[in-house]
Length: 228
Image 1 (cartoon, rainbow, N blue to C red):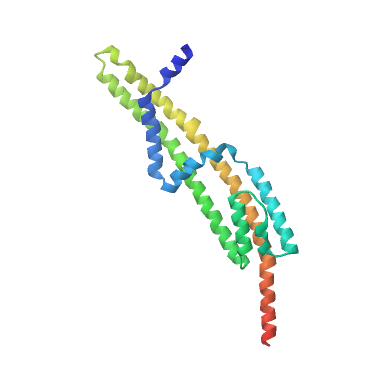
Image 2 (tube, rainbow, N blue to C red):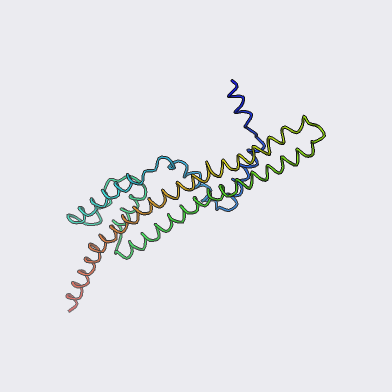
């Protein structure tokens, strides 16, 4: 019972509102609406993401695409069973591609778009981590001002003093134990994810060059022969 009471003694709604609310507000003011939505959505895969497993699945899809291209045609690669929206989209574009140049253009644009989205989400959490200590200091100053105004009545000093001290602690906790670690982990996950996606798209681009460009060259040769 005493431990529970001690925990409640550390909880200060006013300090929490100023520090957490202020940090979130600063991050939102620096971000776009999609970045704000992405920052919340990123919390779901934060602990569940497994880049190694995703990379292994991508290697399997690449292997199946090569096998299908050797026996059939690239238009058939969209029948490959895969997991994840990225692989499904990549396979679909490879199947629909008219040339390796068209596919490579889409691949570069897709990866750059994903990189920018990841950077925006990471920046949101970085902004929150950067703002939290400052919000803690603001709440601390507010608490000290209230405390000095109540110096004549000793019974009114405790609450504002508690707000001042707890606010500083909350700012450090949010910055170093919540927002900062989230940003660091998202940054690592982003680097790992973009790496295997780049490798996958490079393999698909090479496959498109080998299959599509060769076919286009053959068609042009036949057309010239017929024209003669």
